[in-house]
Image 1 (cartoon, one colour):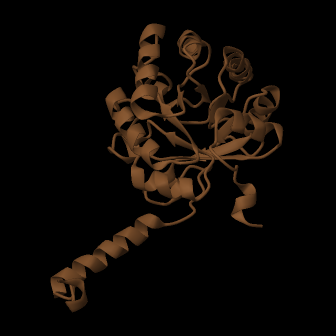
Image 2 (spheres, rainbow, N blue to C red):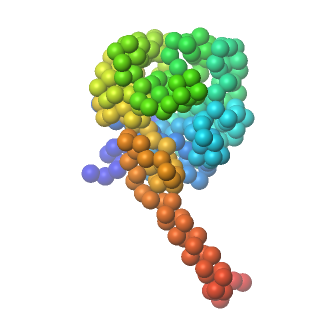
Length: 273
């Protein structure tokens, strides 16, 4: 079966994702942070591109997502939007840009939408983020929610282990899922939660639920591009499938280049003017 049969035709919108859920079609989402990679994954048929605050990790080398700023997220968002022709582009709202102040949250979301040209924003949290989500959506800005493991709260939890493993946490996650839908979120990312719970959340919600480390019973999947391509090293959670070992290939190519330069075999007569 050709790839085309799995790819939504035309520009992907929030309505497209909802229709895909209604029709039982899985949603494929990846992160991207720059023009070149975004263009490649868009051409390959990805449904949605997340300009993730994981740029703090894979692009800047920070141990958490906390240091990245709103200005930096806008920079990455602009680069990705320039490249993407078909996929839905969602930009993460970074830590400190929406927590605790709905007015500040709206200002941040407006800046992202106006300056990047993205299709939507994403932010973490359920009930605690409700006022900010409500304010952003009231301005006509589409919001993707994020529940389960919320990396911006790492200092509160102190670990990246699986979330919602107790009945109390599980009940709260299901409650927050329905709350985000009620507030008007067009979809939700569920990160690192038990598969059966994620499937239950997906079935209880009429909006798409996209998982990362949440099993196959949800409406779609998202991975960090650098992880699934094998560019990042030393990160191998259970949920990650590496589709390539690009890190090794890049290192090998650079080694050959260094050798050719040192030997004087690059450039050759055909590679000069």
